[in-house]
Length: 259
Image (cartoon, rainbow, N blue to C red):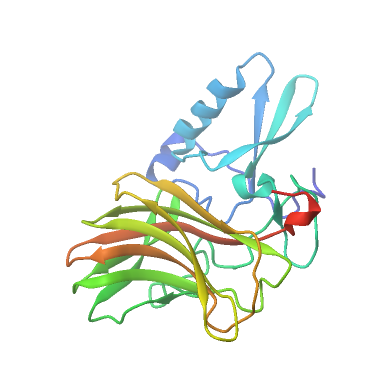
Protein backbone atom coordinates (compact mmCIF):
# COMPACT_ATOMS: atom_id res chain seq x y z
CA UNK A 1 0.00 0.00 0.00
CA UNK A 2 2.85 2.39 0.80
CA UNK A 3 4.42 1.78 -2.61
CA UNK A 4 1.15 2.05 -4.53
CA UNK A 5 0.05 5.30 -2.87
CA UNK A 6 3.33 7.01 -2.01
CA UNK A 7 1.82 10.51 -2.32
CA UNK A 8 -1.25 9.68 -0.24
CA UNK A 9 -3.12 12.11 1.98
CA UNK A 10 -5.12 11.14 5.07
CA UNK A 11 -8.50 12.62 5.99
CA UNK A 12 -9.26 11.82 9.64
CA UNK A 13 -10.58 15.07 11.07
CA UNK A 14 -13.92 15.69 12.70
CA UNK A 15 -17.00 16.01 10.51
CA UNK A 16 -17.46 19.68 11.42
CA UNK A 17 -14.10 20.50 9.82
CA UNK A 18 -15.19 19.09 6.47
CA UNK A 19 -18.52 20.88 6.71
CA UNK A 20 -16.54 24.13 6.60
CA UNK A 21 -13.93 23.00 4.05
CA UNK A 22 -14.55 19.77 2.11
CA UNK A 23 -11.48 17.94 0.74
CA UNK A 24 -10.55 18.92 -2.83
CA UNK A 25 -10.66 15.64 -4.79
CA UNK A 26 -10.15 17.18 -8.23
CA UNK A 27 -6.53 16.02 -8.50
CA UNK A 28 -7.16 12.57 -6.99
CA UNK A 29 -7.02 9.46 -9.18
CA UNK A 30 -7.84 7.10 -6.30
CA UNK A 31 -9.63 7.21 -2.97
CA UNK A 32 -9.08 4.45 -0.37
CA UNK A 33 -11.78 3.85 2.25
CA UNK A 34 -11.42 1.60 5.31
CA UNK A 35 -14.68 -0.24 6.01
CA UNK A 36 -15.66 -2.62 8.85
CA UNK A 37 -16.63 -5.99 7.37
CA UNK A 38 -20.07 -5.99 8.94
CA UNK A 39 -21.03 -2.71 7.19
CA UNK A 40 -22.68 -2.71 3.75
CA UNK A 41 -20.27 -1.13 1.18
CA UNK A 42 -22.92 1.12 -0.42
CA UNK A 43 -24.19 2.37 2.92
CA UNK A 44 -20.64 3.08 4.06
CA UNK A 45 -19.86 4.98 0.86
CA UNK A 46 -22.89 7.24 1.34
CA UNK A 47 -21.84 7.74 4.98
CA UNK A 48 -18.35 8.80 3.87
CA UNK A 49 -19.78 11.28 1.34
CA UNK A 50 -21.89 12.83 4.08
CA UNK A 51 -19.03 12.92 6.60
CA UNK A 52 -16.54 14.60 4.24
CA UNK A 53 -19.12 16.71 2.32
CA UNK A 54 -17.96 15.34 -1.05
CA UNK A 55 -19.39 13.40 -3.96
CA UNK A 56 -17.72 10.17 -5.05
CA UNK A 57 -19.99 9.74 -8.08
CA UNK A 58 -16.98 10.00 -10.40
CA UNK A 59 -15.23 7.05 -8.74
CA UNK A 60 -15.87 3.29 -8.92
CA UNK A 61 -14.47 0.26 -7.08
CA UNK A 62 -11.27 -1.09 -8.67
CA UNK A 63 -9.77 -3.24 -5.87
CA UNK A 64 -10.70 -4.57 -2.45
CA UNK A 65 -8.11 -5.62 0.16
CA UNK A 66 -9.07 -8.08 2.91
CA UNK A 67 -7.40 -7.03 6.18
CA UNK A 68 -9.13 -9.65 8.38
CA UNK A 69 -11.20 -7.28 10.54
CA UNK A 70 -11.84 -4.66 7.86
CA UNK A 71 -11.73 -4.15 4.10
CA UNK A 72 -9.90 -1.43 2.18
CA UNK A 73 -11.94 -0.33 -0.84
CA UNK A 74 -9.88 1.36 -3.57
CA UNK A 75 -12.00 3.64 -5.76
CA UNK A 76 -10.60 4.92 -9.05
CA UNK A 77 -11.81 7.64 -11.38
CA UNK A 78 -14.05 6.38 -14.18
CA UNK A 79 -11.52 6.96 -16.97
CA UNK A 80 -9.18 4.40 -15.42
CA UNK A 81 -11.44 1.59 -16.61
CA UNK A 82 -12.88 2.96 -19.86
CA UNK A 83 -12.99 0.01 -22.31
CA UNK A 84 -11.40 0.37 -25.75
CA UNK A 85 -9.40 3.50 -24.94
CA UNK A 86 -5.65 3.63 -25.48
CA UNK A 87 -3.14 5.44 -23.21
CA UNK A 88 -0.72 7.80 -24.98
CA UNK A 89 2.25 6.15 -26.62
CA UNK A 90 1.25 2.51 -26.49
CA UNK A 91 -1.35 0.03 -27.71
CA UNK A 92 -3.49 -1.84 -25.20
CA UNK A 93 -6.21 -4.45 -25.24
CA UNK A 94 -9.84 -3.52 -24.77
CA UNK A 95 -10.64 -2.89 -21.14
CA UNK A 96 -7.15 -1.65 -20.21
CA UNK A 97 -6.56 1.57 -18.29
CA UNK A 98 -6.60 4.81 -20.26
CA UNK A 99 -5.58 8.41 -19.69
CA UNK A 100 -6.84 11.33 -21.80
CA UNK A 101 -4.33 12.73 -24.30
CA UNK A 102 -5.17 16.31 -23.35
CA UNK A 103 -3.59 17.13 -19.98
CA UNK A 104 -6.11 19.75 -18.89
CA UNK A 105 -9.21 17.60 -19.50
CA UNK A 106 -10.52 18.33 -15.98
CA UNK A 107 -9.27 21.95 -15.90
CA UNK A 108 -6.85 21.26 -13.06
CA UNK A 109 -4.19 23.36 -14.81
CA UNK A 110 -6.57 26.24 -15.45
CA UNK A 111 -6.32 29.56 -13.60
CA UNK A 112 -8.63 32.53 -13.20
CA UNK A 113 -6.53 34.40 -15.76
CA UNK A 114 -6.32 31.42 -18.12
CA UNK A 115 -9.45 29.29 -17.59
CA UNK A 116 -9.14 27.50 -20.95
CA UNK A 117 -5.47 26.54 -20.80
CA UNK A 118 -4.85 24.01 -23.57
CA UNK A 119 -8.10 24.94 -25.33
CA UNK A 120 -9.43 27.91 -27.32
CA UNK A 121 -12.70 29.81 -27.52
CA UNK A 122 -14.36 30.26 -30.92
CA UNK A 123 -15.06 33.97 -30.37
CA UNK A 124 -13.42 36.83 -28.48
CA UNK A 125 -14.45 38.51 -25.21
CA UNK A 126 -16.90 40.82 -26.97
CA UNK A 127 -19.00 37.83 -28.08
CA UNK A 128 -18.56 35.49 -25.08
CA UNK A 129 -16.65 35.17 -21.84
CA UNK A 130 -15.05 32.13 -20.21
CA UNK A 131 -14.39 31.88 -16.47
CA UNK A 132 -13.15 29.24 -14.04
CA UNK A 133 -15.57 28.12 -11.32
CA UNK A 134 -15.04 25.89 -8.29
CA UNK A 135 -17.59 23.94 -6.29
CA UNK A 136 -17.56 21.07 -3.79
CA UNK A 137 -17.12 18.54 -6.65
CA UNK A 138 -14.13 20.27 -8.28
CA UNK A 139 -13.54 22.72 -11.10
CA UNK A 140 -15.42 23.59 -14.26
CA UNK A 141 -15.40 26.30 -16.93
CA UNK A 142 -18.42 28.51 -17.59
CA UNK A 143 -18.91 30.25 -20.96
CA UNK A 144 -21.42 33.12 -21.11
CA UNK A 145 -22.72 34.32 -24.49
CA UNK A 146 -22.79 38.11 -24.94
CA UNK A 147 -23.71 38.45 -28.63
CA UNK A 148 -25.80 36.32 -31.01
CA UNK A 149 -23.68 33.71 -32.78
CA UNK A 150 -24.46 30.69 -35.00
CA UNK A 151 -22.26 28.73 -32.61
CA UNK A 152 -20.03 29.26 -29.56
CA UNK A 153 -17.60 26.45 -28.76
CA UNK A 154 -14.53 25.54 -26.75
CA UNK A 155 -12.14 23.57 -28.93
CA UNK A 156 -8.83 21.72 -28.93
CA UNK A 157 -6.60 20.41 -31.72
CA UNK A 158 -5.75 16.74 -32.27
CA UNK A 159 -3.39 17.23 -35.22
CA UNK A 160 -0.26 15.15 -34.54
CA UNK A 161 -1.89 13.32 -31.63
CA UNK A 162 -4.30 11.06 -33.53
CA UNK A 163 -2.91 9.52 -36.73
CA UNK A 164 -3.97 6.67 -39.00
CA UNK A 165 -4.84 3.88 -38.29
CA UNK A 166 -6.04 5.11 -34.88
CA UNK A 167 -9.40 6.60 -34.13
CA UNK A 168 -10.55 8.86 -31.32
CA UNK A 169 -13.25 9.35 -28.73
CA UNK A 170 -14.17 12.71 -27.24
CA UNK A 171 -16.12 12.90 -23.98
CA UNK A 172 -17.59 16.01 -22.35
CA UNK A 173 -19.48 16.49 -19.12
CA UNK A 174 -21.61 19.58 -19.61
CA UNK A 175 -24.69 21.45 -18.53
CA UNK A 176 -26.25 24.46 -20.22
CA UNK A 177 -29.07 26.94 -20.49
CA UNK A 178 -29.77 27.90 -24.07
CA UNK A 179 -32.40 28.24 -26.80
CA UNK A 180 -30.50 25.99 -29.20
CA UNK A 181 -28.68 22.77 -28.28
CA UNK A 182 -25.38 21.46 -26.95
CA UNK A 183 -23.15 19.96 -29.62
CA UNK A 184 -19.99 17.86 -29.41
CA UNK A 185 -17.99 17.70 -32.65
CA UNK A 186 -14.96 16.06 -34.22
CA UNK A 187 -13.84 18.03 -37.29
CA UNK A 188 -11.44 15.95 -39.39
CA UNK A 189 -9.94 17.12 -42.69
CA UNK A 190 -9.98 14.03 -44.91
CA UNK A 191 -7.90 15.03 -47.95
CA UNK A 192 -5.58 17.52 -49.57
CA UNK A 193 -8.52 19.22 -51.29
CA UNK A 194 -9.74 20.44 -47.90
CA UNK A 195 -12.72 18.11 -47.71
CA UNK A 196 -13.70 17.39 -44.11
CA UNK A 197 -15.93 15.12 -42.06
CA UNK A 198 -17.92 16.16 -39.02
CA UNK A 199 -18.88 13.60 -36.39
CA UNK A 200 -21.46 15.14 -34.08
CA UNK A 201 -23.46 14.36 -30.97
CA UNK A 202 -26.33 16.59 -29.86
CA UNK A 203 -28.03 17.05 -26.51
CA UNK A 204 -30.77 19.36 -25.25
CA UNK A 205 -29.77 22.15 -22.92
CA UNK A 206 -30.26 21.04 -19.34
CA UNK A 207 -29.56 22.44 -15.91
CA UNK A 208 -28.29 18.97 -14.96
CA UNK A 209 -24.81 17.62 -15.69
CA UNK A 210 -24.86 15.21 -18.64
CA UNK A 211 -22.10 13.22 -20.34
CA UNK A 212 -21.89 13.35 -24.14
CA UNK A 213 -19.55 11.28 -26.31
CA UNK A 214 -18.63 11.23 -30.00
CA UNK A 215 -16.14 8.96 -31.76
CA UNK A 216 -14.37 8.60 -35.06
CA UNK A 217 -12.99 5.16 -35.86
CA UNK A 218 -10.14 6.35 -38.07
CA UNK A 219 -8.26 9.63 -38.61
CA UNK A 220 -7.67 9.59 -42.37
CA UNK A 221 -5.49 12.62 -43.09
CA UNK A 222 -3.35 14.79 -40.78
CA UNK A 223 -4.14 18.50 -41.03
CA UNK A 224 -3.47 21.51 -38.74
CA UNK A 225 -7.23 22.29 -38.67
CA UNK A 226 -8.21 18.91 -37.17
CA UNK A 227 -10.10 19.72 -33.96
CA UNK A 228 -12.71 18.65 -31.43
CA UNK A 229 -15.18 21.04 -29.82
CA UNK A 230 -18.08 21.39 -27.42
CA UNK A 231 -20.53 24.24 -27.09
CA UNK A 232 -23.81 25.75 -28.27
CA UNK A 233 -25.49 26.11 -31.62
CA UNK A 234 -27.65 29.15 -32.39
CA UNK A 235 -26.33 30.94 -29.30
CA UNK A 236 -28.21 33.98 -27.93
CA UNK A 237 -27.15 36.64 -25.39
CA UNK A 238 -27.58 35.26 -21.88
CA UNK A 239 -27.12 31.64 -22.95
CA UNK A 240 -24.39 29.76 -21.11
CA UNK A 241 -22.75 26.36 -20.92
CA UNK A 242 -20.43 24.77 -18.36
CA UNK A 243 -17.81 22.03 -18.88
CA UNK A 244 -16.49 19.85 -16.06
CA UNK A 245 -14.65 17.35 -18.27
CA UNK A 246 -13.44 17.60 -21.88
CA UNK A 247 -11.38 14.51 -22.70
CA UNK A 248 -9.68 13.27 -25.87
CA UNK A 249 -8.83 9.55 -26.10
CA UNK A 250 -6.97 7.59 -28.74
CA UNK A 251 -8.83 4.49 -29.90
CA UNK A 252 -7.19 1.25 -30.98
CA UNK A 253 -7.42 0.53 -34.73
CA UNK A 254 -10.75 -1.05 -35.58
CA UNK A 255 -9.08 -4.07 -37.12
CA UNK A 256 -7.44 -4.90 -33.77
CA UNK A 257 -10.77 -6.03 -32.38
CA UNK A 258 -11.36 -3.22 -29.89
CA UNK A 259 -14.38 -0.99 -29.61
